[in-house]
Length: 385
Image: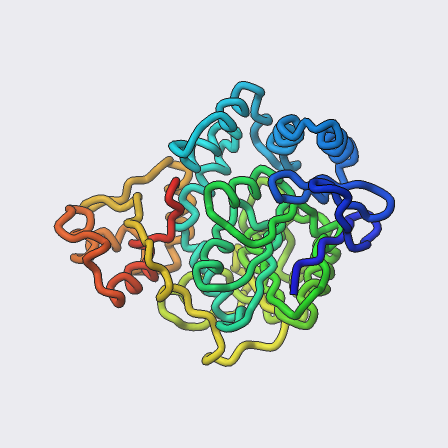
């Protein structure tokens, strides 16, 4: 069954009005490079629609690439940067593209997210909530598509929604995400019709939402009786500078699911175990709504991954920290995963063979590759990382 796009203003299904415009009967919504813009930023929507109607797709593209969210710590990219970005060829990397888009510290987060304990915690949340056959995942606040890429490598159908159009453009161009991508705000509408029972994911984002109840209600509608998986939701203990973090008591009022300590999902990834309940000391929480999956029906990441690459942060006997800020955040998260931290991983004999070049990734047997993938020594990086 195909994906139904819905208007964020009146909720009606959208119908084509030409190759790059959709209509809800009241307004036109633009589609640029296959990515629909369904946010209720009226001035931008109108400007992009007018550019498309005047056959100025390049202008429409630049308008969307320069759009940011309310928490962006940096200014939008200037004309020169966008010209460089759009004029570059296949040699352009994801990291350089994010620099040209002026993502600032967000670029570091996206560049090294594969190495974070919170990322594999999200993968474990997906393993417990996505069926291993015939599943579909709709991810809200999908960013540049880290989870979508992992899911698609396992044959899972995906839909990604984010409020920043440029992130979705990166997901398609550099991350190779093939599923439907939509720029929309789950706080104001689903933008996706509940076409079939599925798993809805929201990871490392809910604390940014000012209207959490509305967002969760919309996620439940899209899940259509399936599961809603919410991970890495900062509590007020975390001292996160932006967003709208709440107390554990408030989160318990928002969901019928069992509130769990988000850090325990990271440990559960490495041990193939289960998460533990949140406490008053939990700095971030997670939960799943809907019927739990039997163990035999759960997704298990790894075996289908054939193009794994060595973690670029690992060197002989040391970790190549990209920035002090990223190192500090990693070490705070890794304090709860014990011997599975990168600082311990560099001492592993097999990892040392890889870092010295005495063995290549292609020389590893499937079990070795799977083990090193689960430990974050091998990563599912995009070719133009």
